[in-house]
Length: 471
Image (cartoon, rainbow, N blue to C red):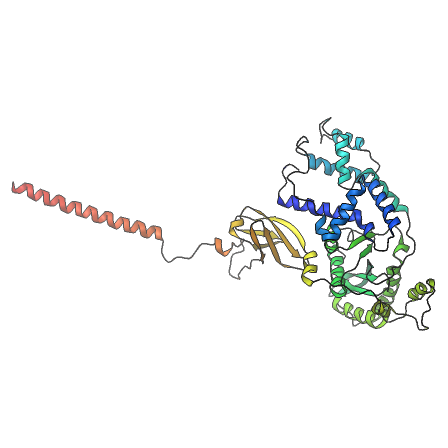
């Protein structure tokens, strides 16, 4: 892009790193043998119009420094100078047209843009637009692959060790009557694919993407790193922020085939157990609040589900020809006896990975607006566009970043009880109280001196008259 600012460049770098990470995700599976690895690399290269050498370079960058190493170097422009100034907007329109009808050819997309008056005839070239669509992940081969994935089913699988794969999903919970209002609850859970142990599970009063982020942050803080996670195509699970947060921690995301319930059999089976709990909740008049609901859910999980022998574990070991003790194996037992060690992140690293990032413009009062409140920054930033980062679960404190200035925290401005309800200014911009007006005092002094000069002039004039009379 011809006029990319620093924030645009950072967004582009994040997007490109995420695209590269998703390309090489199938190649990061440690269980792949050499022949299978070569086969997968060839397929990815062919489907995305890349060379195998490029894919190996991405892999080496990732292995040497993780997700951040996949970010491309800063550059002044993404598009060549020969393209129209509104080319970024035209590309976004082209992407939307391809998403609406994946089978649309580049020629058809160009024709539509020309007929709509968005592009002058002959300005858009097929080869150029095709290349940029492919770079953005909307090439024809990529779209065909997606269409194929919609109709294919996944075979039954089970990972060999804990924390190799974590499945996540949301289920409708009971409706609670809080006061005079009925509140629908939602259960967000994460289950270990191998042991079937529930790593995190909690009821919420909404099903926004922040709920899923909170669930997986709790998993990582309590049990450490895992290799990959497995989601359906729900909007919460394909959200950009979740992808970025997990990618920053080098966690891969796999999506289940569309409308293929059996591919998520483990968590679907767990949801049958949740139904048993919900039936008990309906019979218990003590549960009136979300806090009550989660309190008894935690007890139900720890004392019943996690400790109860799991039929799926018996079936798994039976398929391997391994004898299982008569009482069976519970998810908790299987998780704790696994030979694979847990690997933990520093809490600050996890916190940073799950921060949300946005941009705001500093107004004439040195403040920014965020979620209906005003936050004080620095008067030196007036008129500048700054980046803010915040924890969605605790957004009362945000961190402000701007090139050349040390990042600092900003808090909401407080309005006193006797202040007028106009927007307050930072302390550095308010008028200082004064006992007297220095301007009026200066004029008063000048007036006094002028008065004295006039008096002296009159006195000297009288003296000259008297002198002339004597002559």
